Image (tube, rainbow, N blue to C red):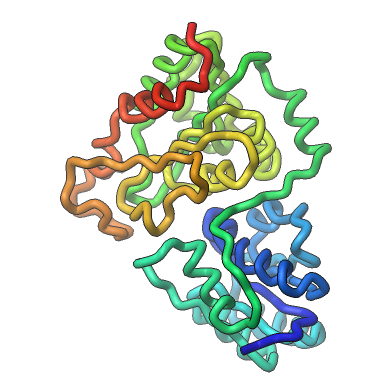
Length: 328
């Protein structure tokens, strides 16, 4: 077992949800080794999400990794004298990077689709480093000035629900029809005395034009906020509703909103929402759920039947049962 840690490097690039799911690795280390320096190597967008994290001492940004960059970066990383590298990326280039850095111990992630991703990432270190303890929770730090800036930009004084439509490119089995999001938003503002705020990237704006002028309490803020500002927005919401993508998991890691996640191809036991107050919704009409595959043989255009079979009533029933939104 590894102990007496002074400095470690954690590696995980790629999707922001995956990076967020690695957080219990470094938090468990900080709990047991509070003086250990933790460096985190990741991509530019996840780096912004982690930029205010109190348990990370340094963030190293790398994008578009080439073999030349692997060799160059390994020379720089050698100078940091890490005790351990925890490589949470199943990538040949990043395994090579960890090897070339020549630390005394490299712990490589072994993907296991039979357990939750948070536990899977944790086990990479938890089984090898002495005195670590697992907490099944996510936490994201947001600077107070960012929260206050976003609070001033919220276009309503009412309680509100955030909907992340993910109208742009999304992995198969994770995309819900924009028309269903529209139906859901209208039903919420018609039944409850709340506003609905739509979020997304600037690329989503064209698809979100179907929301224009449909109701005075539906606001489109797609492309308005960066990743930390979006997290701040979620922290003021009553609910955050979205598919199994980064924004949903970010919302589950901030204090306030109840999250409702829509799940198709991916298994809830693998990437379901972490936290007792949240809801993970799936279709009950298909025997092939969850296939956990990247491509769907039954796909109709850009939509898979596993997502198409989730209805707006499935979500509205959850909101009704929670009984926290003020009715009209």
